Length: 111
Length: 114
Image 1 (cartoon, one colour):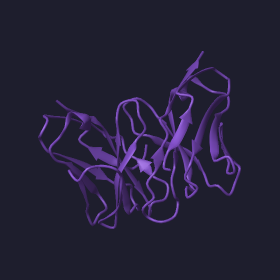
Image 2 (image 1 turned 90 degrees about the vertical axis):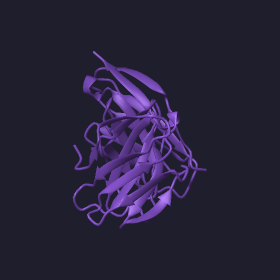
Image 3 (image 1 turned 60 degrees about the vertical axis):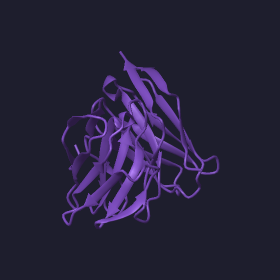
Image 4 (image 1 turned 90 degrees about the horizontal axis):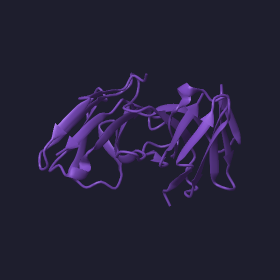
């Protein structure tokens, strides 16, 4: 088990709603990345935060946004939820972008 | 340019056998190649990783072979066990710098039978 924790474990939302997912990084890590993993697929990079600044973004629309806090924990916010947003959302922490360790994920279902 | 191609999609191996999963990448800027193991309902767990300055890395029953000129790398699981049954993902990224996102393969579902 890594020291990365995520909450909540599962979440059900309705199309059009907004959601916030949370991640606590492993002790000593200053970088957090978020990934979306659709069923049967590999994780897809959403964005990365380093020292509270966005530091790289994948091919996701602006309604996906995030924050990193001074203690290096992080939030992922998704606005105007769509059915295709249903996925496992993974947080990974690392020290300055080196070896990433993943949390257990948050399973989001959009109905 | 950012794709990582992984094969096979699924693999059935008898207990004690060798499981081999292959990946190929296109972007020569990648310099970090990890393998992750994922069980149903869990996040990916880092298994083993390699840098392109070595051709092979072994940790216990897991070995990565790396061919820089062919832009290919593979995972070998020796003496495969039923507990190894999981989905395996290769990935590629840059180990230096802070915008080091990982690009993942599509995964290989491994089943080890008795």
